[in-house]
Image (cartoon, rainbow, N blue to C red; front, side, top):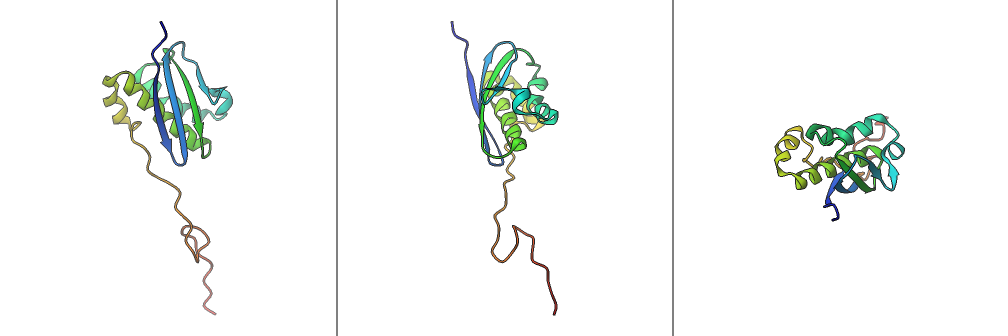
Length: 130
């Protein structure tokens, strides 16, 4: 009998992560690479593991992630969001815990567009009185 797969989508900045969770031994694969290889910084791995550790699901599930767009920090945030959503699909009782910690809330901050006549979104050229 095949294991049931729970999937969810997580987003942060311009990154989108598709997360699949099945019951297993606790291995995490991101874009066909182990978690430690894809995310070299410990802080990023810690961000990703937060919802799993909070719910006490460490070592119980295999997680396969496909993530694209943005940089590593945005991708880590998207993966965390996707894992939290997938855990809620798996067990609705976890919703309260995850929502309280803010893992189910999509971070709405996006890059602000560059404005004409300015150097960037807000930075201006140096003012000269004469």
